[in-house]
Length: 361
Ligand SMILES: Cc1ncc(COP(=O)(O)O)c(C=O)c1O
Image (cartoon, rainbow, N blue to C red; front, side, top):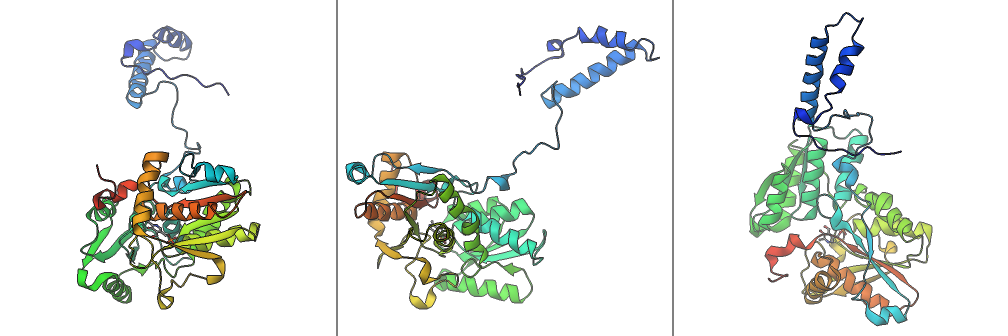
């Protein structure tokens, strides 16, 4: 369909006044006074100038996107320099799934939307209700965004010593933040959230136990990777926090091709990488199922931070530390295999870590 170019007009004189006589002629015999018709035309024209277009009126049937529609369908991009000649000789391709491109900036936009949407569909919650979550990281920011877009009140609980920039992002989306004593850690925040739910102050979504967390990745992340590699993926690497990403993607990909290797990245002993943990057996998230992970690889904080700087400066991929840890593992796998298409998850963007000093000026 040909598209009509839109030229901005700044004054009434820019309009085609020759249409006024035409209008006047067209009212002959209608009983309408030509002067009144001209005045009406000028009034309409002025209102069009205010709206910025003479030609088109809003079409409420147009399928415009909402911000919610922009969650997911993130790009899958190939690393061009870091894998080097070794990967080339082995005929391996390494791809990053750019989850920082989600509107609230991380992979957590998917489970946040999934947990709220599915609870709503089950009739457990309705807009206007209060949702509660003890979380300090990407999930808090994502939940705050989804609550704002769907009309919920969001209460986020976290220890007082946690990053100011994250708190400010959550508050910007309108979430209420309750700071708990730092001596109590996340456990105190979680206990207080439980108490608030018992007292009828709202519903806890609980990303560690909520099946709608992995379901988000089963329904979206997994199918996107399968589609965008045209079924060529051989290895999937994800850093593990709640394990929602790896559980959901693994379930989907193994259904398509059971030979795809699923590799979990976790911080090595003594290393701290935001968003991920090496869970002691007793504390493993309820959604975790051992059988869905073929291999776990440990990665150090130092190596992950170094890789985060390399990804930014050598590939133009400015990402978080856990994403860089997953990349480190993807490269390790690449050195052991041939003819492989290895996908790793780029969980979030690097600007979320500026205050940590990982990217010095
Ligand atoms: C920065 C970061 N990386 C990785 C993850 C791990 O994702 P998942 O919880 O799906 O295992 C998270 C989760 O919160 C995260 O915030």
